[in-house]
Amino acid sequence: MGEHDAASARGDHAGHERGSALLLMPAGVLILLVLAAIAFDLAVGFQAKRALLELADAAANDAVGHGLDEARLRADGSSCLDAARVRRSVAATLAASDVHAELVELRLSSARTGCPDGVVITLRGTRVAPFIAAVPGANPPEPLIASARATLVVR
Image (cartoon, rainbow, N blue to C red):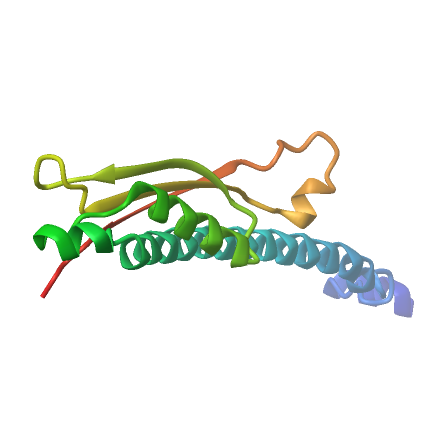
């Protein structure tokens, strides 16, 4: 019995399968790259949503803080918001931010009749997915919506 016949009788095929693991390495690396791209796109999307929520919170808080109708407060002591001052404050906050957001809704709310003391703000942004956007036939980025509410409290 020859050396080749003895190796095949033992089930030792190492000589014939030499380098087969090397052929699987490019496929493994490609799978890792695709998974990393998906993870990166998800992280960027969550960060964009968080930034939009933080901007909505900041705009609502600024609107309530800067929107106090000082003339009415001095005249009769009521703490109400002035709609024009609220709009200017929200516009300034959005302009100062590096987050691209569109104002969808700006609504004054009131716990008392005739005296607005709260603000509701809704913003729209776009979720960015740099790797998925490069795939032909991929869905367009979905819009992000963030809302925030703030109420004027006088102590």
